[in-house]
Image (cartoon, rainbow, N blue to C red; front, top):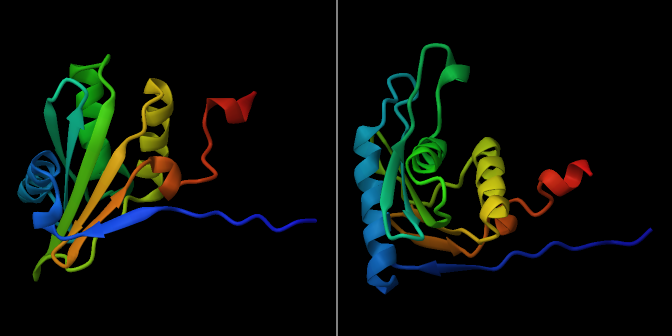
Length: 159
């Protein structure tokens, strides 16, 4: 038996340290929190993704009294992008969240279901997706979904 260590590389930056494209993406994710329907949890999540063609697509979480039929911000943005631009890889996604007290101080990370969807988008286009996780204290920058979901289940897992 041997030990295996998994390591992720990420950066932590202030909003003003991001390049203009990333700053716009984060600002759009913050804006998207206002489009959330979170009547039950009062936890509003927004996502903004940039496609290879430069288009920015927004998403926001949508809740329902039957919680399992709601959908996260990341997946609403990804699914909308896949319908409108099926041939365009997602280059980057920014995620922001707020509650009744305002924007979250610490960055919020995608749930497991969103990580799985993001992983399959990366695999589909053979293109890493940069992830910008925003909090008022700063932004985590992750270079690939594989850093958030290192032992992911993808097509190759079923062969």
